[in-house]
Image (cartoon, rainbow, N blue to C red; front, side, top):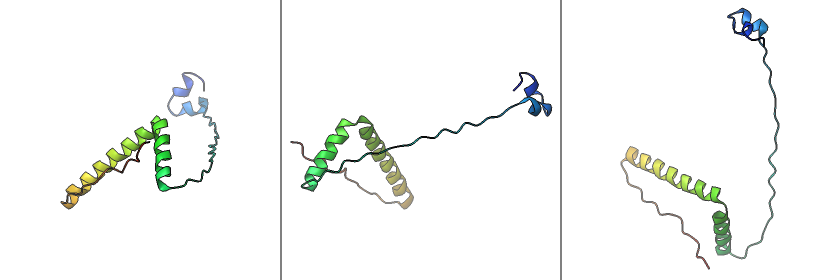
Length: 93
């Protein structure tokens, strides 16, 4: 738009311009299947991956805290007390 003229009420629209840009992106997820011999092995491998990726650990922590807040709110609403136990951690070798 033209400086100063585009800011004039009513007539400013004649001197103003608007443009839109469309950006397209794609997310490609590649998976590699692995056959595991037992649920314990699956838990161990999941734990290893979780430890390797700091963003996953932080997200898990946030999810646990959020769940605890929602449970406390539900308990206050219903007048009950729910006790939850943290998920079992796989045994480390």
